[in-house]
Image 1 (cartoon, rainbow, N blue to C red):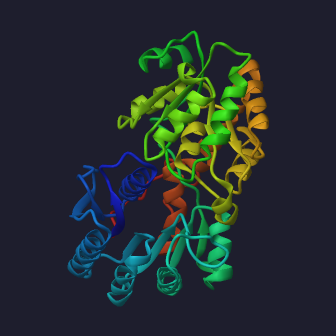
Image 2 (cartoon, rainbow, N blue to C red):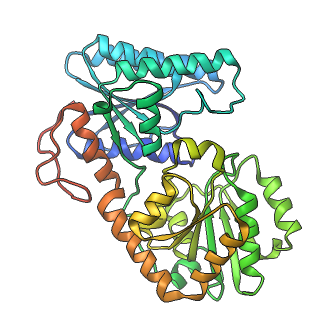
Length: 395
């Protein structure tokens, strides 16, 4: 049983995580029920139960009610429940435990609590903190996507460290593979004669666009064939367009808007010489980051330039797949320029990223390492990057 307050019609990392984890639970031999919002993803071996609602209250009521109903119907045979953590899904956790399920919760953010400057009212902050404390008591296992989140849950929310596993967001290794750059550019409708720098993601508050765009502008100043491709959209698009204009690089940048076709995303990454990642420091210094796009860059064999924030910095250092720099546009520009001008080094960093993706970042690997939290033995011979499978269905 999987529950997530996620709209499967949105082309973002939360949708990717939910669909891929469900897919690989089923591939591991588990019999899966999935409760989400949005269209049925049509996954083999996964029964979909659609919740509704767009406003916060309506959707949370619908997700909880739908999930509890499915938990009740499956209680005779199902034994495990996986919940993508939201403060308002404590009723699902409580119902699952009361019905005898083992519960694993995945946590990818803690945007409240001590030492966090939040727009939440004091009451809302207290409610979310109380819900997280309850989650820590109710869950039999917790997946934290960064070490920072795991430390925070243990230190501030008194979660038993033995319940915690640090598992990053992953990638579909079969789809995101190293591509011939010219061929990928042609498929993506880009001019193969240019050297592309690519960013993929939501144009959201947590992205440090000023540093990233100023860094590109600095690198492009002496490289007339350098071109920026921004894949995504969101509320900060007007700000991005204005900053590109102020920097004088509007004609050196392509904004694709949202791209729903993952194969086109693959080709846009494949056309690049450098991929970018930049998050605002204040929140992520506290919890770290493990963005899906980083694993996709790795699997595509492309080097990464990123701001040196917890989670991302360690991933780049451990993999040897890119350059982590301080929050300084000039340092960001220098790193981009260095990789644009040195194709051999860029290729070596990209190859290291692919190896890391195969060893640690595949969705299969992430799910394989989640199974023990349910008390399920990993498939025989399966481990990070393995293709082992369970031999009999389970719930």
